[in-house]
Length: 284
Ligand code: DGL
Image (cartoon, rainbow, N blue to C red; front, side, top):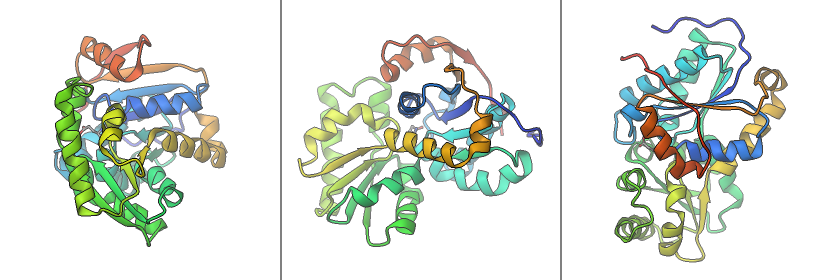
């Protein structure tokens, strides 16, 4: 049950992802804004979201957002492209007015879409993402609102998340699937001169994607754009900024085992020792 949360909260910024990938977003945000407090929530027990239906991703994401609200977050970032594609709009329009009208939920697709205008000369771009993100058409929809002249071609890359999760991203075996998806995308539209890596895991495949994407093609990793857009948002919304506490702390929550999270988080966060707790989200 989600109860109405009418009391305005001061607390950490919540960052949600289906699993570990959102740590790449958290990393960029903390680099730019180390003074804020953060709670990261990874729904590792139910990841990946990329192949799940709209209803399931929406339900799971709503539970996670409600949990972060319960923990006092005034602002939650869906640091997951699949959740941003399938759940953000419904949560903002249907749920927020009922459960927490004074809190905000933002995603990663809009900030990435905003960045693209100056990054392409040919006005042909590619999006690589999970099946869910690509099928939702969220990137073309957001990009065309801002830049109707840009041709957007999507490429689902279903093997890339498992390759990162199983730590195969630097091994030779990964080359096959990186090359395959890059070639498929460029065959669909050879005029592409910029590719958005529209999934939180893909920065870890950067070197291999760079190897197979021709030199003239710009690769766009979204972390920095999301971080800058968040800072911009907080500068423009001083009342929200005042409610985001600033103690420089990070708390990590997972729906899976603490040990598993600690071990895998190091792939995304390097040597940092993370303080992890387990949470359960309500079943729908
Ligand atoms: N975090 C997801 C995204 O950015 C990828 C992992 C998943 O499929 O759950 O789309």
